[in-house]
Amino acid sequence: MSTAECQFPEFNPEDEEIKAILANSKTVAVVGLSPKPERDSHRVAKYLKEHGYQIIPVRPKADEILGEKVYAALKDIPVAVDVVDIFRNIEAIPGIVEEAIAIGAKVVWMQLGLAENQSARKAREAGLTVVMNKCMKIEHSRYFPD
Image (cartoon, rainbow, N blue to C red; front, side, top):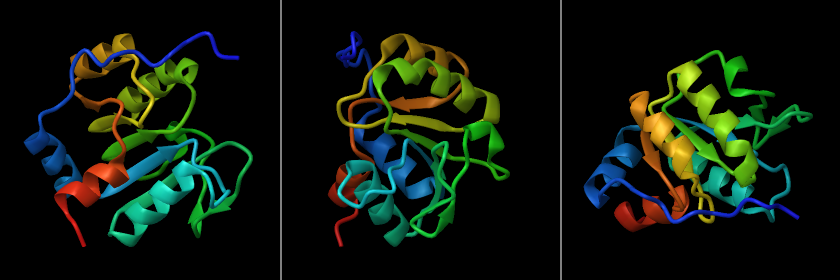
């Protein structure tokens, strides 16, 4: 059982900034993307792909998910990443944020149930936008309904 818990986000972008992130981002690295269709990470990534985003799965020990090549770590991705979408446990967030900063990502997005304020502050200090405890699929469908 995990000892770390989701924290209350100290900050989050305003609605207009979230809408702009979704409108202007093209490449989303989905960290912890499951190959299992019933998992939230899979459903969200599939939705994003169907709505024009380039999805880059990040998951050790997988070769392909949703028809996309899988990378073991963010540092292995050969293209620029706009958003790092995190579907991992809270303990993994500090390391993922370090990698997101190192690769020059623009946004760190912690999915529903994930907020880690210390890592979020570090990402913001490095110039990244941080979204916590929100789902990209839910936010996208809210701002850009089909």
